[in-house]
Image (tube, rainbow, N blue to C red; front, side, top):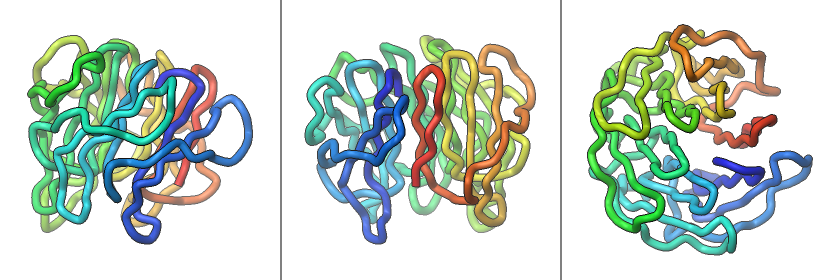
Length: 250
């Protein structure tokens, strides 16, 4: 999310949670309570601009369409914003200052190629944007102010084959995603985060938890490059960044 605040919410710890916490990305220290989601939920995902933070979808244990919102300037509990076009969790998000986009996902039975979007300033339901290049769940989202990229994921049952596909969209338009290149490894459920120019994806499941971090230059196309390693191999983590620093949690 933009700015120096990283917000992390929901999850399975060990039962579903509605807790939301935040950190100051530029400083070292523990997370602090922000407020609560509307309900206990896992496998949800978030998108933000400078004023609003939205949490969408997830598993309660049935998969949801609900989009929830909190105001970044005031903190506190989340309230209803609207609904996604389809129930899902394990999806990825990208955003500009005006628009939030929700791509790919999994509904407990099927992986999805649907991409939909909201306008941050307007309360209401999401609208269809287009389709990703393949149906998959567990992708990582990375974005500049104009372009969004979806990296990796798992394919349909029963194999749930892990992917290295990266595709991209132009956030201000609508339409189907286009091939960008390949990640350094086949994996699902990494955490993605970005500066204005570079996207970074870390961790995930590559036939076992992985510590791999790789990166792309968002304004170009091409394959990802090795960045380094997380401190430990882990899966289904979350990430946030400011202009200089990225943080991986969970």
